[in-house]
Length: 174
Image (cartoon, rainbow, N blue to C red; front, side, top):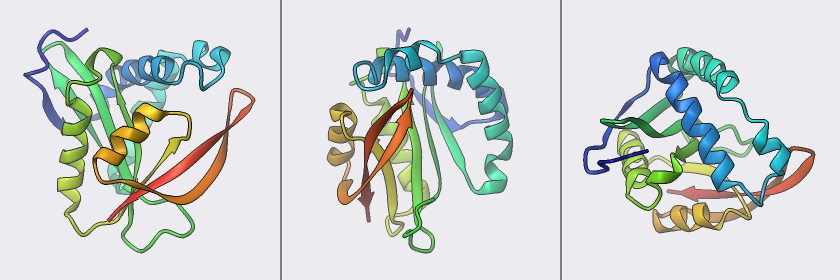
């Protein structure tokens, strides 16, 4: 999909980006979670439905102190990252959580996720504690987060997707 990854702009998303974010979201899930999440669940992901969800999410986000950044090339949006208040019961005051980082599979390994993450973390400042949840079987993502200073903190949970309980691991930084 992407011809020139040297022309990536990171910016705050707006409601007009909902359809493009939804396309990336679905493609990324279908590729990254193949063999982890049941195939029937991944096959049923609907871009139009996700687009509607993202439209509402982006409209409410600033009111809820949630921000979404997009990575855009001349071809369009190729990735996004969403960050907001930490939702965990044991979160410290002011702790933030990365809710999602997804890229068009054609951009994997080209530094786009790194640029999104660095932009979001720079916006927070170095003293802010940040957490995220990652599927235990998603080794690619776990490696990425470790390379960027996140470490598992020993907290795990089960998340049901497509009728299957999947183990998630919490990572923290700061």
